[in-house]
Every structure is written in structure tokens, then in C-alpha cells.
Image 1: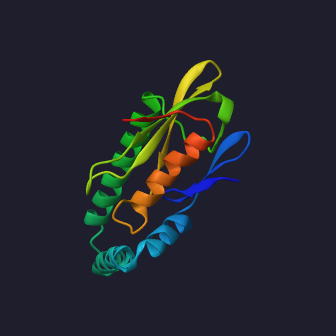
Image 2: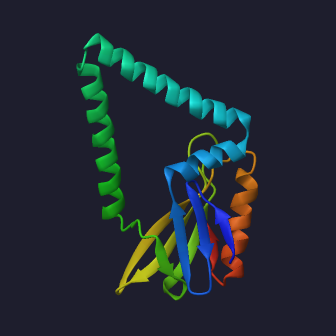
Image 3: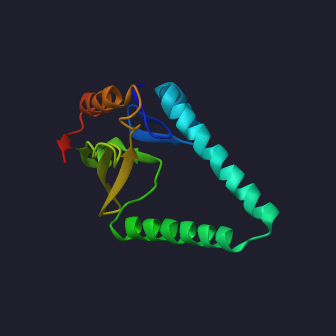
Length: 162
């Protein structure tokens, strides 16, 4: 079954469907596979966040924590609403015969990660699904992006460059 690594797991293109596996554990695995520096940066960020959280809790100052949680939730909800309005879904299985085309977006170095936009038909409506790829900062990022393009083409799916 042809597959390739994604940001948080794997994308499988078997005989009849595109299937996405995704988990935060898979994302940590991607960083670990990508080299020492990405792993150290991720661990350092998580440790820093934990230290800040514990420090604020012990100090009894809840306002910065509540502000941070509120800001995070507002941005998360805005992103979800924006995607839904633009016709993006989070479906994990798309029949291959429903896929119209795939657009490869290489991303901007240092700002956005490479991704694929899968345009497909769902009940007479055109929907889209992001397939986020591993960062190009990881040791295998560029290679995996090219491999994913070839995997889509081998499955008979047109890949456009966006």
C-alpha cells in the first residue's frame, strides 16, 4: 500500500481511498526522525511552557494564564471557522474516484510548511482537504514532499503546482 509521511502521521493511497492517520504522538515522531535540532527545540519549547505554567500557578496570578488560554482559543476557533467557510474539511478518508485534483503548495521557507490541497466531490459539492507535510526544516522534508507528489501521480491523480 503506497504511503508517505505527513505532519502528524501517514497518508495511505490504497486501491480505493486516500486515508489519513494523524496523532500528536505521530507529530513528535516526525520531529525525532527529522534530526537532533528539531527534537531539542520541541522539547525545549514544551519544557519552557511547563515551567511558565507552574510558575504562574504557584504565584497565584491567573490573569496571564486566562489571557493566554483565551487568546489561543480565539485563534483556534477563528482558524476552524475560516477553513469551514472556505470549504475545507477534516475528513480522514476520501474515495479516490471522488478526487478531482491535488494542488501541491511548496510553502514559504521558514514561514509555512509544504502541503497538498485535495479537491474532491462530496454529495455534489466540491470540498477541499489539507494534507500537511513535514516541515522542510526536518532532514527528510524536501524528499518526502517529492515522494508524496510521485505517490499521488502513481495513483493516477493529477498534481498541480500552486
